Length: 301
Image (cartoon, rainbow, N blue to C red; front, side, top):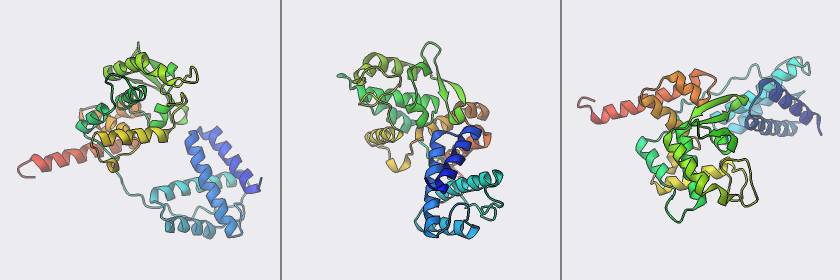
């Protein structure tokens, strides 16, 4: 194992222990830093010998390869944290990332669905006789997702013990291992009970598992698989797939709550955002929709 690899592993361990970052974030950092090491090797440099110009060359190369500003920003964040760690632990006497400017990010609003589009998406899975356990599972997943605003990773990671049908709540372990309780609502509870009664057991081909929504093989579903399922139902519902994202129902959950008068801090708590500023972007979505409605229907718009 090279010295660069050892340093990266030590850094990632410290991130996990001290910052309590989600596993997905740590893995993203690892891939970014492995790409940095390869670039430095081509320049005959290492993490400890690299200077600002070497890091600039790497970042410029990524831009030329067509990476978006958001990807470059995340990459620079990973590199900054690495060198701050190396400086703090006295592996280096300087921080070569200090002169680097962060890329300007476009203020992209979350992709949003109207309430009618959400209703069409929720109705897309077939629940008619004979019951298809996969479609019934997907129906329950979509209903839970829209009712709770979970992240997709939180949804596919749910276990049986995380759900209390009697209390009507779901327990989420979110980013940074922070726990929150989110109410389910009557519709989601109904479809969960229906799924437990008529669908879930048929998916458990390899025996009992704790995961709430198992795959066709009776194992934990991946985020990618569920994203493919969302796109499939979007096509059935005649929704433009280009207008979707994996978190489209999470975004709709937040925007529709705000449209109906929910308090921003309540939405923040339900979404599991550590900062209110992260939640505030959904107020912009709601405002944009109000502007469009005003332009369409007001006689002097």
